[in-house]
Image (cartoon, rainbow, N blue to C red; front, side, top):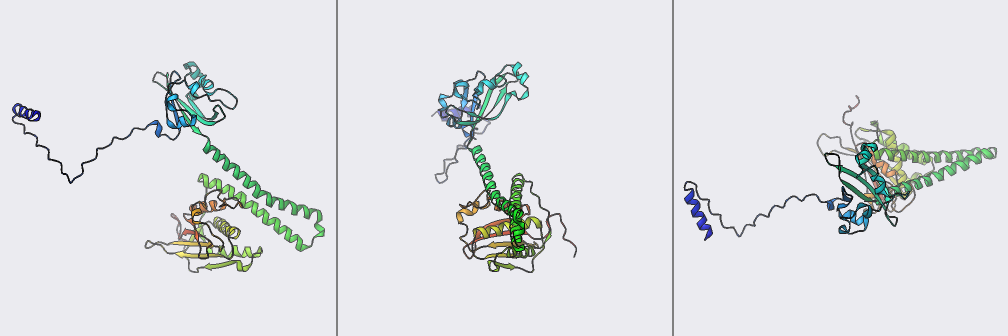
Length: 403
């Protein structure tokens, strides 16, 4: 056998070298090791955006599946085609994109590039049009060799769906804010105009009622403007709170008293306020905003009695201060389980178009700035229960005040 002859020759040539041991027969009861697959190289088709690679002569050298889908062409029908024909893009003024950029950009001569400056090789993202009116977001960059000559151009394409959704959100916000502002401002305008024209014809009680309505509507506008500012702060991470020792049960009592003075029935509210609570550090103004948003949400979208509970949840770890818990419950229809993960999203209404859809989003941002959180589940009555949890004790870096 060839293997035996080879082994004998090796033994004669090198008698001092021990022969390698014969491999052991495979164990039928042990599965063989699976071959290790090589790490896959990144391919253009792995990229979520459309990408085309254009050679120095202007022909397309490579195209990924996302780009082909955006252009409604087969990849094989794009490779080898001049970019001018493959990408007949125009701006809204009717100028051909490739020709206008090429005059100072990707494959221009060195003099044109020098005149245009360092940005000539970079094409900022622009919205351009395909024949038929389809819109694409296009950006590109020229890659040059060490001698400064253009080697290739990489073009990235994206659909406009995400931008359209952002624009739709902005339009929805504008429409919602306009609607929410119109109602109180109309009321303020009507009452003030009536009072100015007929002041002497109204009794003191009538004047007081009109002015109270104007004040309430002005507060509503102020809260809306405040919510809009806070949304911007939450989105940009600029929301700040100023914590100090704070009496949460006292805030709850005062808030309900104001609602009773505003005309709500005493039977509409039930308070369950624990007496022996640990110290809570929070921003009083921001916590008043949180409480207002939660109670207003219960009154507007819930029904029956609104129950406000303040309690203490001891810490799980020894020596911890635990959490102070505020729960706001109503006796309405509640929030369906499938909708609960979205309740604190911006603009979420749950099928009801009243309100801006910003209050609960701001509420969550305010509580997270305190190191707390808020959740929603089902109350024992079947209504909605919003539960706020705030860390008890002074925040890190603060010392408890001396007794």
